[in-house]
Image (cartoon, rainbow, N blue to C red):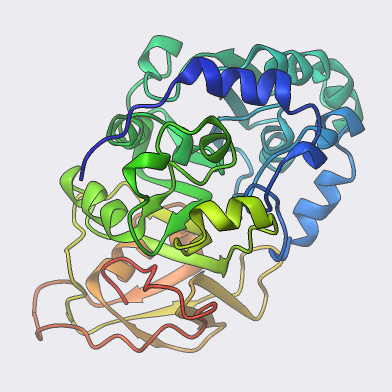
Length: 353
């Protein structure tokens, strides 16, 4: 997999000066549609200032449940929409750091902080914004093993060094911490002639990762399983751009991955089972870990070793009963096909497919 080199100054100009509002986007790749939002996220969004919403660019809703009291980092926060939603969901005892490189975007986020804290009813701000690059979070004083959840919305594709970005993400996450992000992926590699196109890059197309290269990248860092939560095919809705790059199939995929060193590169069977307690807010009857693991409240479900680890070694642990351990191995775990594949997209799942 060859790393691509993009001009970050041109990218700053695209998001800082060329794009002034969401409607200025030339394709639908960085537009959030088709994702169902939880009641809590919808309620938080209703409290976000209009100026922040107007200049929002994203392809999903990367806000997992159970953020109360968490420390969250939002990579490529822009004007801060998702950061402020996370701050609302994290509560007064949580804390959010929004990271972005674009002056104009961050100026909006920072200018709105006091009024947002007042709307939330927080006596002390539980959010801050730091200007810098997502490839170097150490320069922004984000320490090792210090973050509960990392989120990002249609930004990681823009990075010129994706391996470094993911390396930094897993550096700052606590053991058992969660990466939860929405981004643009492809069913084949984007041809090299498009890599330096400022419009295709800014529209989240030229830098979109081939899903298998993403899998290989995570494996190279020692993280051998990730899960696709939702997936939809992207219609570009721009004849000129479709004429140029329409040979590529693009998908908006929401991904979760955990910082766990015990994950294996395929699903292995240890005879384990998990029972969901029905205690995650807004998920009383079932909980979807990913696009093919729906846990019904009170119903035992056979799970592979990776799934068991994700449930019992993360902040989700108190909401599940996991029975069994890895003392006896029964061979590969037979995973069923994913219950929802969007537009026959390439398999977006990790080890457990």
